Image 1: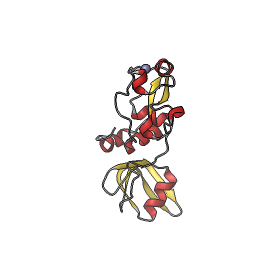
Image 2: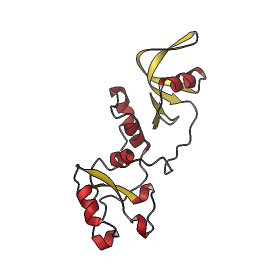
Image 3: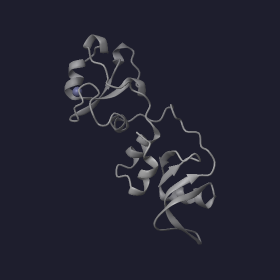
Image 4: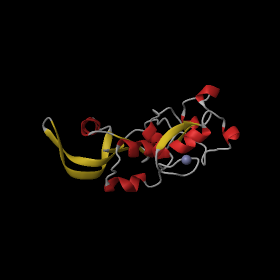
Length: 163
Ligand SMILES: [Zn+2]
């Protein structure tokens, strides 16, 4: 299920069980129905495709969502941030760890293996290699795409402004 915040901003994806609990406790409402129904105890609910929280949940917007390779690739459009190649992707520390670079969103970009070898253990100005976009923590929709690579059609309207 796609979960929208009270403000209709997509925030994450949850499983059927979690969605059922949120709906039964009336912490969320169905925005778009899916196919079939959810059964819980003696109740049957229409199975939702999109639910919305009734009260605003603070989102770690610039926050420390878990950094994974897949999320970095998704944020960077699955392309090397130095040459644009889409093949053989890995991740690069813009400031190498050996030079004090952190493993935070702001210091990690998608990078193809050849660029990674070329840049090696050098700083961007030493290698004359600068990321095309300065890396930032990704929009929540990036995590939704990572959690659910095949996004159902009914979600697109909600994810529209994203990524
Ligand atoms: Zn490259």
